[in-house]
Image (cartoon, rainbow over all chains, first blue to last red):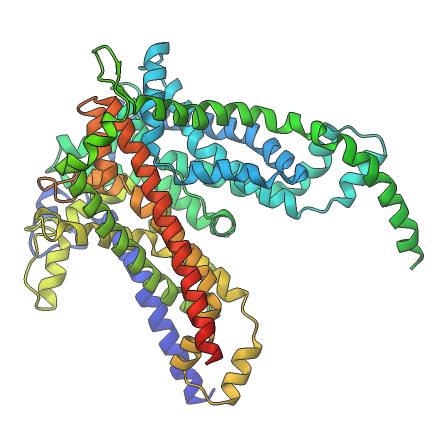
Length: 274
Length: 312
């Protein structure tokens, strides 16, 4: 233990502390806001630990029956959009990887750089014409713009790295392409499936721009519901912060629990929805 | 040896006929996704281009107007102003996360306890629901009750109006964007650092180079390709940034933070001028492609000059 080593360690931990603190302090402050009564949230200088904790803010959010509707909407939209994306995206990623059709990735690239709003204008008209506005179907379909490219992109990467020998052996033994995919390729690519699933869920859950255009009063997802709370409820910070924390809590939990998968997926494709 | 000689004719045997019928046999895997992509990505694209040549307002009949919607753009002061806001917002939102993300990556490249967990905490801002964090930032920016002005007062700085002042609104929003997206740059650069061989560092240590020299002359050139990728991704996302701006300022005060994307939203879904909105969408996409091409060109120039520099 020479002094130089100790100084280096202290310096390292100080840098780690400085780097991580903006994220930690922000989310702690978010939690603090959500647990304070109005009198504490409106006091100056700001109070970090209140004398009385306002669990009531959370109870209020859950008690409003609309919140449960919006929560269900979010679950349905994210669930369906992710499930459909996995259903069509995983085989597509496999097919593209095996055909070595790298040019098809250009479509995904274009989808990646196109602003989400430009999908909305034509699809909005289409849904209006089909009479689907007012249901959750338009949002499920348009969330595919986010989830399908993520799943395809990540799965191409995984299927390209899985060994071909096993698949060739199975083909020689008389298995069909589908059986090879189902029983050989898919089990090996399971880590990739987890990565694609997690990222598709997160980016669909977080999506806001599609909802503000397509959602009606009954079909809002949680991010849209929270946004509407800002405009109507500007002054009661406690319940607002509680609602915001409830909306993003599942994602934060998933981020910490599955950080290895998330990091692998983001650095592989560096994709983001919207 | 015998394994190799046995395996290679078998593999060649198998590969030759396989090539004949391979492409059709994998098509069924791709077709469902192809249908989806055609419906939700390609169709909107073609339809947008067609709509951009129509006078198309919700509730009134449509007429073909050719390029009139495009010609209207340069004479629309709000659009021109929005382009300026977008460019300044983007420039800052690329540079700041690149600087902070690289520093963070150098730190996270070291070995220390609970590194994985702390990395998970560090990337929380970019995974969190943007609208939810925008809401909390709005509270933090509050001029009287916000915690940011309190923090400024602790270090003796005067209070700011943050997003409520036209001159500080864009830097304030960039602060949020930087806080949110520095982790992505960090992850990409961290991947680059992991790929650097150790030999240059060993010889630098023997030569007695200090920390800054090592970073400047070994690390930085080697992670340049990764910084470039990070910069490219950051540019694409910053140009399109919508949730944070819309949820915090709606483009205000006045139109001081109205970017192209926010203006596009207003034109298409507040004024329901869908033809003009489509023209903005097309030009917006071309602008992103042009910026990406500019970055590629700059990288080429940079590579060229640095090669000249090393030869000299």
